[in-house]
Image 1 (cartoon, rainbow, N blue to C red):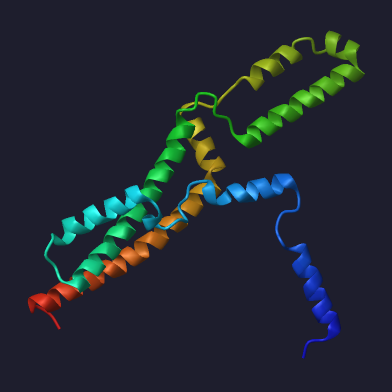
Image 2 (cartoon, one colour; image 1 turned 90 degrees about the horizontal axis):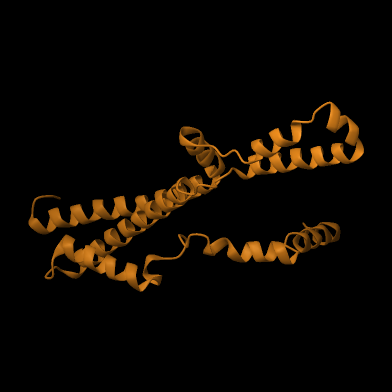
Length: 198
């Protein structure tokens, strides 16, 4: 039995967890679904719908019974979904790899913190900086322009985009599972119609 105290606590918790409160948080949350549009169904895009129709026709041709057509469309829809996820992943990685100014957000944050500390030190102890560490400012400026290249850049990109890539893997698994079950059902139906199976 729920007490008045529990009901009050539940209401307070619900008020506290109704989403972002600031304008910046609301704007970021509004962009969540638009990041890569992988949560949208394939049939929400006219271009992808045409791809599904074309792929389903490749599977079965034009003269097939209704059940086979439905299964072929399920397979095609899931396959186009898988391809869409793979294209999005590829585009994400390629855009970062070909960005000559790519820098990890964590590295950028550390560089900015270091520059801020140097500026603070220079403001507090100008003679120390001028006499004891005169080259530190130019070395710091040179280090702030450094960007990773080659394998270091690829490792940084993979590290930075780990969450996004994991989310895309989940989308791909969600598309692969119905595709595989639709293929099994399609094969079973074909065998039954051809008189080769149970």
